[in-house]
Image 1 (cartoon, rainbow, N blue to C red):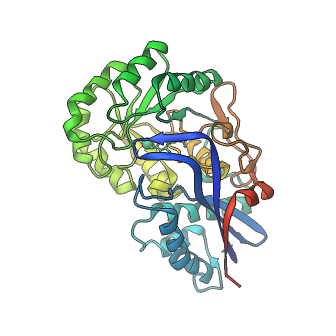
Image 2 (cartoon, rainbow, N blue to C red):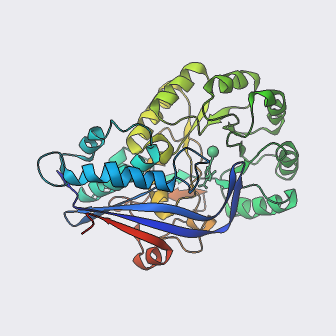
Image 3 (cartoon, rainbow, N blue to C red):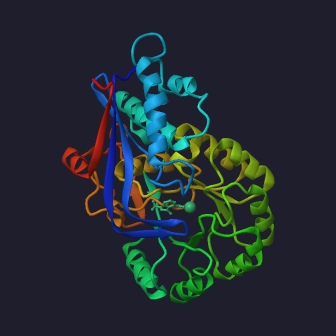
Length: 377
Ligand code: OSB
Ligand code: MG
């Protein structure tokens, strides 16, 4: 039995240690929303991965607030008919709101909080609750576009020396082959990947073939988010594996991509696919097809990061995730203990109940720009 009698939305703004630039924009301060659910003396936490602008996907902080405020939270707090806020299981609530089209990030943030609540209630770690088996997850680092190749090389040196298992670079037209030439010159054998965030088009296929020279583990999302057919054409032309990110907005897109041959690797992001349940379905589809998956990142605070680490403890997360340590992003994370990079280039999967990390109230308070409680009285 699940009883949730209060939901709180914490809007936060947390400055990054250094700006993160992609082909679609730059983030200096991460603005997002944390979702806190409580009932029966237990609290669960989730994190929204949407941005302030609809540049990565169509969702924003405000569309998520709308979905939460006007649809998801009222249904959650009204319950299944057996009493206010009462549901047999979190999955019954998810099924009851299954009619909602789209808005995977809004749904994932609330689902995450409910699964943390449920795992905590059962005194079980979220990783174990999800069926994860690993005690440590391999991690890499995603580095943004810099003002010069020299500045990027310095950045790479810094994170290579910390022991990350692979480095991912953001690319876009005009910031690609020359960059790769320089990076491969300095680090001939380091595991390296690139992410275009959909910055190229089908007309760039000849240019993208030049990437084959740099022995990349994969090329992430070169083409538009809704173009699985051209990704399949491109994959046939490339030696390098294509990894899909933006294109996989749920299990159905994953099935289409597998059927078309649109890539050979899948980045699973909790928000983008609509939460832990959808992530598991995609994990299993890829495993069945013999494709490795890895856990993507959206510049999460420690709360979203704890969800990612728990997810990535599942068996087919075979490649290092974009789940870097807290000190890659923040002067001070919102959680205690922070995520630390282990000597073997992994993060330890928390073993305590639920997400296994505690929100530090005073830091949350400092980062918070708005607090909305439900019920509002
Ligand atoms: O495409 O993987 C991406 C961050 C924001 C939006 C999209 C992406 C990213 C990253 C950062 O690459 C990964 C991280 O959280 O470290
Ligand atoms: Mg990506």
